Length: 133
Image: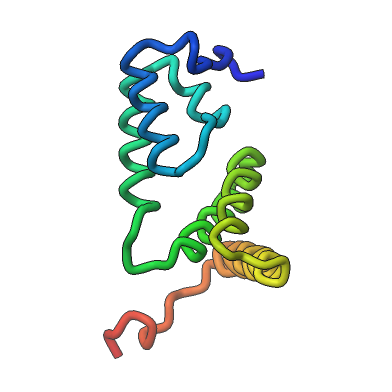
C-alpha cells in the first residue's frame, strides 16, 4: 500500500481533479494510475510532476516508443517495479514488440555491467572520445 494511501478521483480536491482530468485527456485514457493517486496528497508535487512528464514525454525529436523504452531502461536500472510495469505497457502501446523488449533488456544488462567494470577499474576516458585529440 502507498505510504499515505491513494487519492481516488471521487475524494480529490477540485485542483487535483483538474490535474487528473488533464492526465486522462492527454493520455486518452479513462482512469488514473496509482502513481498519480499516491502523489496527489501534495497537489503542488502532482502538478509539477505531471507538467514535466507531459512536456518530456510529449512530441519531440524522439519517437514515443524510443522515449518509453528509455524510461523502461532507466527504471530497470533503478529497480522501480512500478515504473517498469507502467512504461513497459506504454512502450507496448507505442509499438514495442517482445523482440524489442528482450533486446532492450540485453542492452540494459550489458550497459550496467560494463559501466560497473569501467567505474570499478577507474578507466580513464580516451582522448578520442572527448574531441581533444
